[in-house]
Length: 448
Image (cartoon, rainbow, N blue to C red):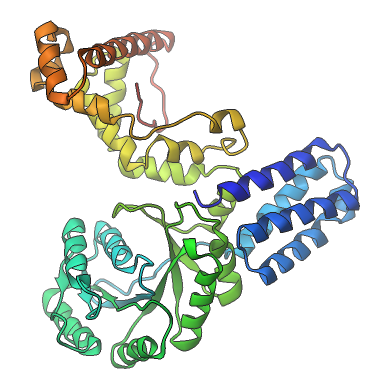
């Protein structure tokens, strides 16, 4: 996650505040100096940091806070509230026109920001909500840009309108509108050309499209890893063509993340989505309060629950619970659970959303290898359907064949079978302890 360094530093500040029974104005000022330093090191805009510290300090040194029952906790609460405000407080949704009309969304951004991948991610999300999107290939300059869009469109099941690279983008956009009207597409995504840097030619091309086509949303894609440059790019695009919102990509990368805390305050335009990975499903709606909770090390349980609900079929979850109670699950169930875990981003991503994880050094020091499931998967896939359903029939000769098929040692096969049996016994014991009573609530996938 982009904010790990910032989170660690803020957690240290909060730890000092909590340790004091009473707070003085000097204590608050010292804490704010450390917060200021941490934000600047995270590449948050200097003017934004200055205003943020001023707002927090004015609220935190009030008599009601300093003389309260838990002043340290109250200061932390103020920091959280001001950070929410900094990023926009409320989530901003793209409001589509009625399904019998065409909503036109123009995507723009510099080369390398992940615009073409992001537009396919966004189209895939709207398709899953029952809309009929169409991707429009208007990047006629970058080699293989049209092909990339076609490949991504095919992966998310969204058609792509293209006229090749021999036409002006504005004419392609106009022809795409006519195509959408004839074919019943009601959300049109125009994938425009990027440049290595902001220039007049690109801006004129975008302005020409907007003057000839009714664009409902102009969305800018920026790379979070470029820090303050991302904020400067957003400012330039907004001043020259006008944008309605921003999508931050690569927010899962090794970056300081200051752009997320600066863009709304500097441009006045909201962050709509955050790209959290390379998969075409790795695009999250941007919730300022949830992002503030993650940055401050408070976890993000709401997003975790939503991920689980999107990844896990409810009927299958009930069926799995019954199998767990009877200890009757097999390796087919195990494969299914691994797939669901991967849809949620892997164990490391799940743990980062849990409250207390960021502040717990002992937990953070645990080496979580999300590729650790590759060997068990290879072993299971080397089994026959009968062996997966009934592991008890796996004798030494079968183990040898399975090991050869998976490219592992027989000892690895034995280890997996042993862990599997131990897990079944444990589940049976837990089922007995529960007394057969049904538990409500949503469950996350189990692991071995």
